[in-house]
Length: 294
Image (spheres, one colour):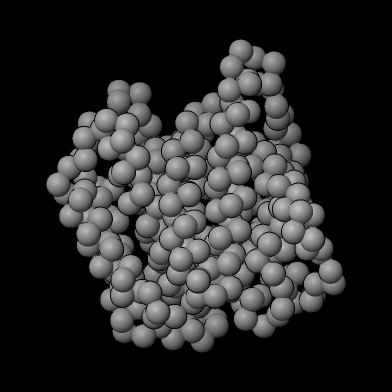
């Protein structure tokens, strides 16, 4: 179940990442991340009301861990991710994301004592190689495509590291406390949003200046779609995965998001190269090794 949830999250995030990349050209990274967090938090509360799940007394340890995870993984990590999208676009940003799984595995090994079997490490390596092979396929880029490589690498590394730390902290909360994935996702998202609010106030950066401009309705629509798919459903599935699979395995499967973009691109009439197909097959071998490894 944990592995399947991670793959489902990867599939959903592959679509939402394309939308975030478009939105990152219109809004600042901080504002975009805050809107995502607030809207997703409302969605989590609505889901809990529908499912009859209430935020009962949460163990202090779980609450603290998940808040720190939200500060780091969502407040800092997602903002860095949005900045990377602005600097180098979705394709190369996703490539930087493939560094997160080994970081997660190493951090989980050091702090949680999670020892991945050799099969899992081989699967992680093969999956990363397959994803990297797909993303580095040279395809013609539009003239206005973002190309600030230095900033993109810096923010991509920050995003990968913070996502790894956030995942391990969430995994720790699931290992030693009794908390549901939905409640944990709400706590993480709320904590990340709180950090972003303080950050924006400190910088005195205005928000929602674009709402009265032409095209605002379309932007709201894209934000809602990306938030519902990626920040709401995707994060919920990520928390389920971290609850039921080893952190390194979960993060590796989630990093396969770029693979799911290929069928969408083909349906939209874009040419998918033989190299990309080979990369998918390589990554699928790695995914196969990871199933059951945790």
